[in-house]
Length: 216
Ligand code: AP5
Ligand code: MG
Image (cartoon, rainbow, N blue to C red; front, top):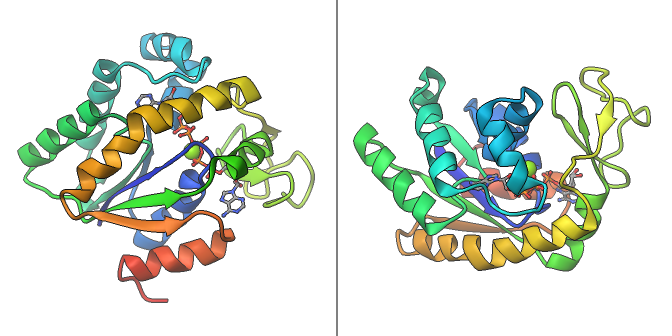
């Protein structure tokens, strides 16, 4: 299964991606997560990406495309993949098409998580992430069993550096301006499968499985 998941910041891409990854046994590849890892390791790419991420802007296409080109060549992608947060511009979508053509593979579907901007701010401000295993929580919608501690690995829960209200507003602006057109790009290829991101996490995942032809 070769999938993309597209949606505004806070739409629930990472949350659904974690479930899809388990269910279909495919790697979950998040460019945001790759950049955050590079930032914590203080690599050259990380230092460059931080300048943009902290403001809620996109990291330049040249950097992001190269990162994905290398990632898709790794062995684990041979069994399929789920790309979360890539492509985010038409140039990235075109570059991905070229990469896939060279690898002689095609996408099966593009999941579009559709949701109102109003709900997103609360979701992002309330998000907490495990500093160790990156598991996602929410202060009211998906509480950990013990406040501040990850259920899965016992790691400390933290807030992401780009989850401030000011940055979120810019991330939403950027999404509408640069990433929404990517949905039209894939609609023309007949690949879009839209799901409402408003329902609860389990209901959305049931629909995802149904749309992708999995057993309930
Ligand atoms: P990235 O890490 O991709 O962030 P994003 O797109 O802003 O999306 P988020 O991760 O914030 O939200 P999500 O949709 O994953 O929601 P989640 O599941 O966590 O990118 C970060 C930055 O990196 C970008 O701004 C950019 O600078 C850079 N970047 C990344 N990719 C790039 C690219 N291709 N090109 C250029 N730059 C790039 O859910 C949010 C919260 O809501 C959680 O707390 C969760 O528990 C809760 N929740 C989830 N689903 C539900 C539900 N159904 N009901 C109630 N609560 C829910
Ligand atoms: Mg995410």
